Length: 523
Ligand code: GLU
Image (cartoon, rainbow, N blue to C red; front, side, top):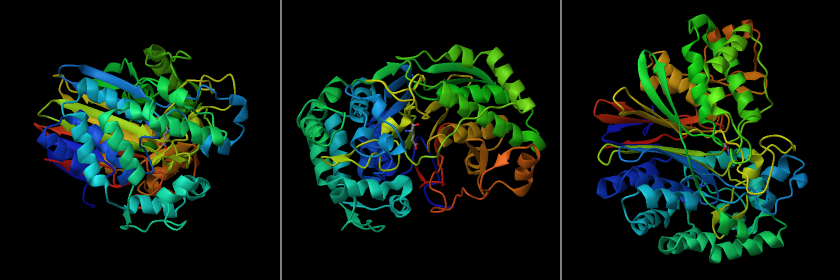
């Protein structure tokens, strides 16, 4: 099994970059806490794994510390003030080029987290990050996804001259292991080390304004100057899971944490025998993804009725529909973006689950001053009249669901999150159900084969055996191409990759999903 899959210690980190995890671990050991380490990983990923998240995107942070309790920070991107929703007609308008870009929130989010909960000096974190960013080596993961032209990455990078210069070598792909430098990104870091306003109100904002107005984009420096992250009330719920009264904290909308909690509630009331497990699970996932697509949205624009979704009535009704096979489904697509970082630090007693994205792999394909920008407009529902329709300043619905579980004594038991579009939700439900309800040990709960849903079909990882897939087809479920998804790098790149920390007595076990690039580190 690959290195970086798991690690045990008093401080533990799981991310999809082994290098970022080990650098962040050193940061906590020297002088920081879990928040400082999370900031470092997030910044490092800009250069070490540039396809999934970065300063050009946004994210959610779920944090727990004994002093502050649970806190949830939403630094999701917002639609530009000048946006004209009627001009988004097809997939490409939403996902490619200048008009696909929503206001980036990552830097403002990291700064806010750090100001309120960090310990190490901001400038020291940035300097430590810059030291490793001066010269980077192209990872196997990034190279594999570029070679596969994941989410049309090559095509979109070729449209923007700065993207071509930054992420391509002579118009082609950087080979695995080759050296790559990010001088303009380093310049940004040097400036925001001293003043984050450089990004939101200073020279970066001015440059972005010029680039966007000369390319007919909607985003402007006004969007950047008005951007603010939002502290939201986390969803807190007590649940009897496998005979234990556990306390769950999840990311509220526009994230999808409520749906992961709802699914666990439904699962606690379901019979989970071997013959019916997969058909029931598949129908549950169809139901949950349908709710993801029809209900989740920015709560400042439309109410998402969390109490109702988690109510006994709603759970019983969903259970009946699942048992009777009367499930509706929603057309969905796979997407290859997002980074998950999970961190536990027993010394400072801070715990973080951070999920960040630039939406599709390589975002919109537009780069400004070394910053690869998101295509988060793609997460809106283009039709008008939907809770998730496009509106100025609105945040698009997200599948991202950082989550934490406390034990009966109130001590952190699991810190978890995932990347991979809608597979974030289905992966987390299965890992948590495996471990908490089916009694599977932490590592096997992540390694076990998973199923996902795509529109009305169930797609299976190749670890799901023929007996299990037989139970799905005999239950009348439509199967997608079997053996489509695999743990072997390069055969499937939509991942659904979980990064989790499980408490193990006084230590923490970091486990990083081998479906992506395992980067667990602990000491
Ligand atoms: N932007 C997506 C979301 O917020 C995630 C993208 C992905 O993981 O592919 O749900």
